[in-house]
Image 1 (cartoon, helix red, strand yellow):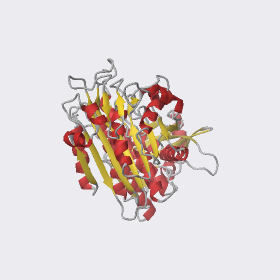
Image 2 (image 1 turned 90 degrees about the vertical axis):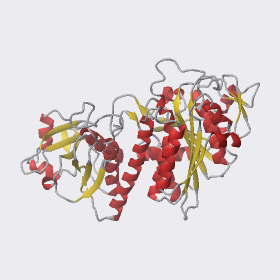
Image 3 (image 1 turned 120 degrees about the vertical axis):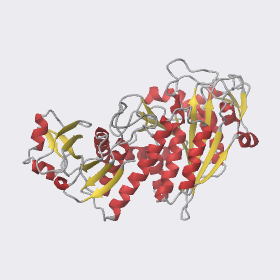
Image 4 (image 1 turned 90 degrees about the horizontal axis):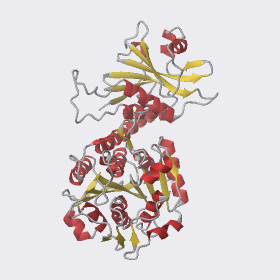
Length: 506
């Protein structure tokens, strides 16, 4: 695991494998960013010109390596693009710093130590750079033989030292501690998403949650098949009926003695989604291990809240099941009696996420939290609407939806508010049951949100995050985002908990 430290040392005398500097895109070529003055001076103040000669422009994500100047103990300087040069009296934004640090850390995979001489104006900048570096250094190598002779790649960067930080300053130390806790838990969520389904079924996921809860003083309760049957959790049981690996509902409870608010996070945890009897077509199954990314995000956020000691009570609900076709599987046309007592006609067994979430939402509502947020890789329709990098936010309260959107943007997660048009409810009317699990084809992501709203307790503020697009990156890595599981929504949930703890959400 990559270590993160602060240092006031000068770049030339620091023992490291590389010195990372920032370069911005100026009107006349690359401009060396603040924080790298000592490095620039060692090039006689002409580092920008040298980089320009090498073809660098300072564009975001660009990386240029060059030999370190004489007298440096590090052999290499790595210049990473920050994007456009800020206007006068402005500074580089937190997300620009995160992305640049992430690119640099990923580039330096295999190195033992790197010193980051990027722009640090305050503790928040240090936190952003630290977070970006720790997220960018991530590598999922549990199933690879990593070593000097291995063909599969290199291990992650071992240590990140932030130059220009203040090791004795309380604000800087807190920023680094926060970056470490959030990044480590987000990376744990990535690990879960990337773990193949033959090793991560509902029982195995529940065991991981139990171990983490015990480590961090979080109360944990796991409902197995027998307990789910006794409780009447028809949605979770119906989705898991076709699998030999029985479903689970995991409840994680973090409490703080000074808390006055209670948040509930609910995560969809389909550890593998074949579509069930409504089998997915060829080409749509290979990445379906990621269908538990919502539960992974909820799990990570609760543990991060506990590690940070936030003054807010947070309950996480992980609705875990494997959706498989078999003789015991739920069929299209079956009617399930949900935990709430409502009946649902299942028209499509591949619309299973809303069924497990419905039971967990009703269970969460029983505790009357101040707000509920559910997170799910729920619909392909949301990907069609917003693409692969942006998730949709739906809510029964416009102000809460806006607050979540602002929180997401603040931490660097791309999100967009979406409506819940009541006229789409008519498409879910069933002649057999209280409601069907499918509605109109167009606006399918919104239909799913309307279905979930039916299982939120009266008077409870609720939001739904459909992370189907950004939860799993099938393309190449970018910024601090790796290929595979991304940990989408973890930082938004943590930020929501932080804001709630200090009363900024009312």
